Image 1: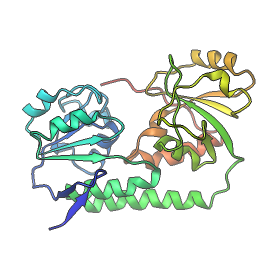
Image 2: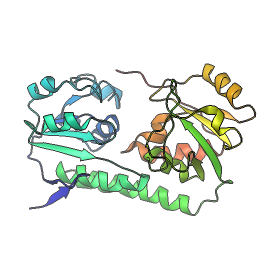
Image 3: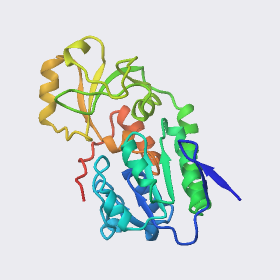
Length: 273
């Protein structure tokens, strides 16, 4: 019997014909729909909003960090999909007490999306759709390898305010940006999402990016950063395109190629549905 390994090394067999899936990961929810599994989604977080027209009738079970365990139990899922960064380990352990399968995801770089497609496509009998997504992703990655890049940039990528927080180079976001020779600072960090002082980066970065999520950075915040780091270019960037893995990663590569060339708009931050 074929089995597929998740990010924690747990082996999952192919699901039955009528799986009942709860997704606690917004980007994975979008991917599951792209794989043709919308009819099998029985629960989602309030941040799982894409594709918008397809998810309005799917019950919400809290947020990514404050899931309603009782609500999930009542949905009688066969599978719950979680993520190491986005969900709490203690919630995953509680889910294992009643959910037959808890599938753990943890993409760390754009290339990891292909195994993610294969995992979910294999478990849920959508291998053909998963193969198409993988082919599209790998084709874009291969093209980028042969595309001339601009000069390397040192980037302070901010995801939070009070305190200011950024991303370590071991994160998916940083590795996505590095495909375009934009390298996040600090170069070394003990934390995946370290707190920083803006003044420490004067003269050390070429630009500052304010992500549209998880903090709702807006135009008004550009002035605040410019005052702290005079002379350093500051811009908003669509955080869904830098941080959402899954099927979104394919479009994200096009977006970031245009963005690093100065030709891509910044999408408005999505609200909880």
